[in-house]
Length: 192
Image: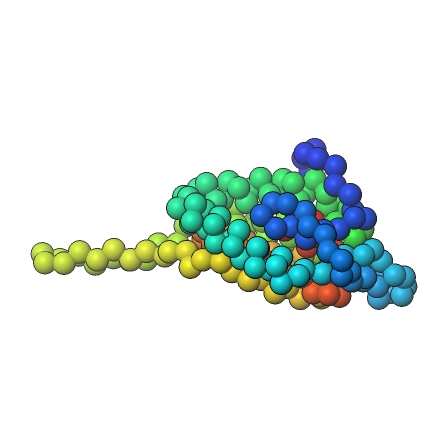
């Protein structure tokens, strides 16, 4: 059973999120349901300033996030999973509209996302590299975060394929800027 919703989310109003703040823009894009040709909602197109601000915010967040522990990052992913699953029905309905998928396939994608979260939270151990030690030398190998990751996400499975980029990057201590496909601009704006 999905947890209760933490806040109410409007699934018909969309914005870009930069540094935790909603941003709108003068330039808009409008998706189309490929199954019905119905025009969908307006979404803002990010300006160059929005992109610059997103990179600056991601770099700033990276300084702190990269120093957190594997356990802390995994716990945050688990909380993200709870929030995501509390909106599984709404995400499925939105996915149906923006991709034109039948309900069964949209529900499978959302359910697969939950399984993907589960794998990162419950089954993925912290990666460790073997070291080396002798009388003269001691070598410790470590994985280290690289920085800001740009996740350019596809249209065909926007939930699962974007999570395939976002979750590993975040769990390894990187920060992520998500750029959804213009064909499926809606569902990613609700969990970015």
